Length: 317
Ligand code: FO1
Image (cartoon, rainbow, N blue to C red):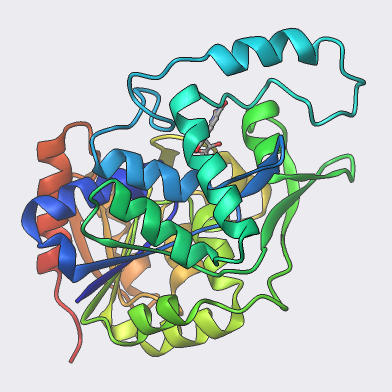
C-alpha cells in the first residue's frame, strides 16, 4: 500500500499522475484540514474537495471548485453582502459555486447528525466513485492561523483568498493541534504503508498542519526510511501559491534545501526538479537520498512521469 500526505492543488495533480500507474485501491491519502473553515454556516474542506474533484475530472480550470459551475447563489450573495456590516462573515470574497455548495450542504448536515469527517469524506468519495481512500488528518478542529507583521492574527482563507497571500507573515500557528487527535485511519495509513510520499504541497502551510499533530508526526518519523518527499519549489520558485516568499518571511531558506531542512526528520529521499541539481550535495548532507527529474506537472503525462520517478525512487531497507 502507498500513502500520500497531501495538501491541495499540487497534491491533486500528483495524485492524478499516480492513479495512472498504480491501482487506486492501493492508495491512501492523508489530507490537510488546517484550511477548513465555516462560512455561511457551511463546513468547507478545500483540500479534500480539490483532490476529490481533480481525481474525478470534475475540477474547475482555476484548480479548485467544480467544472461546469454556475454562480447564481454567489451573485445573489454579492448583492446582499453590500449591505452587511463591515465585520460580518456574510461575505462574497470566497467563491462558492452552485454545484460545489451541494458538497458543503451535505457535509455540514452529516456532521450535524453526528458523523465524523472521515466517515463523511468516505461517503462523498463513494458518491463520486473515487476508488482511492481520502483520509482527513483528524476528525477534530485544527485551524491554520497566521500572524501578520502588524500583529493581527487571521485565519488561513482570509490570508490566502481575501488578502491574496500578498502580505508578509510573521508566524504561523495550528490552533487546536495539541488537543486534536490524528484519526485512527490516518495513523494506520502511515504506520503500515510500504511507500510514503509527501506530495509537492506547500511544506509550511499544507504539510505543516499534519506535522503539528504530535502522534502523526511521531509515526511519520518512525517511517522516515520509507518516505519520499517531492519538492514544490523549482529553482527557488513556487509553481502556485506563496510557498517561496512565505518560507523566506518565516526565516527559512526558500529553496529545495529549505524544504529538505523542514522535512529532514520525516523523509529519507527527496525528489527535486532537475533545475536544482546543483543543490544535490546540500540535500544529501541532510541525510537524504536524492533524485532529480522534471517535476512541473503541466500535463497529465508529466504528472504520470513524475509519479513513475517517485515510485521507483529507492528506499532504505
Ligand atoms: N481560492 C481562491 O483563490 N479564491 C476563492 O474564491 C476560492 C474558493 C474556494 C471554494 C471552495 C474550495 O474548495 C476552494 C476554494 N479556493 C479558492 C481554493 C482554496 O482557498 C485553496 O486552494 C486552499 O485552501 C489552499 O490549498
